[in-house]
Length: 383
Image (cartoon, rainbow, N blue to C red; front, side, top):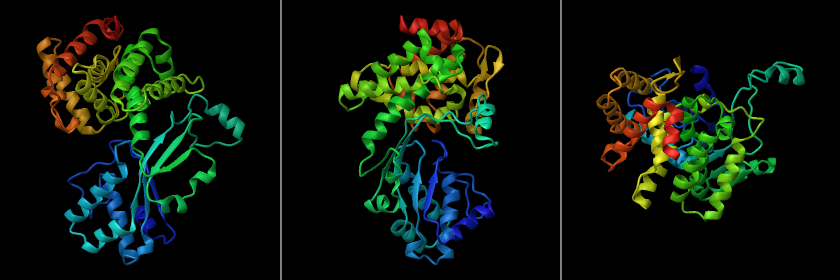
């Protein structure tokens, strides 16, 4: 941690780029300046910036350009807001807050690229081709897009476009973000618990399966696209392109790798589509709520008698462990766990049981999954 803070003393430092997942840009009440380290990423960054402020005595030319890549709405704005909050709670000098506001630039960004990660099944061949061992190899698709919303001086100082990569500087990234998060990421998150509990391990295999593939296409075209204010032709084309990317035969994108922090991902990637669908259509999006029921089943942590390696915050894992331990298979116990999940405002920032029919739909889907298995439940859904 001390080595991390020492980087703040580098006079040549100008850019900070982060990706700590959707769960990363979050306020943690217990964080203090004296912690070594703070629990949250914004807490760590606040301490880092304060170290830099003190080192250079608040010099205007020592502010930073911060490019958070976490997939949440207005990621730069939210990161800055939490940092300002910590500065106040930690009783840091007002001059520091002024320095943050005037001499540091927090950009809102959007990253779009499917990156399965370390290619463990191909690493021997890759090592042979390279002629040396590289433990930092990362596999990704050819397609890529980085949208950066910020003042013109960022583009001038960070001439990434000249690299020939697909990088867009804009003063309004919202159309790019909404389309990508709702369709591509929303499809991923909707698919994970359904496909994995069905017995499939990768995205491509899911699309190739006649049942799971239909489920996902129905979710995208019938329940996600109708919630977006973009030309229908453009939405269909983008969705078709996304499905083609999912079918990439050279990528083995494991469903479990996408499942990291699935609760916060559902909140940011899928729930907005579900709520907007209800608002516009005055009916429930059956596939998106089926996915939520599947997610609850996924957090039971079992598939065909084997333990699922769940990856989420300890509070989330403990919550599901407790509530699943109280499920005995009866409708009453299933109703209780669904009610506990949907009413947990720490998950959703609202009580989803207050939405007419929402809870009953999720209960019905979860009962179907538990009684019929995922195969039978999907059949029942799409018939």
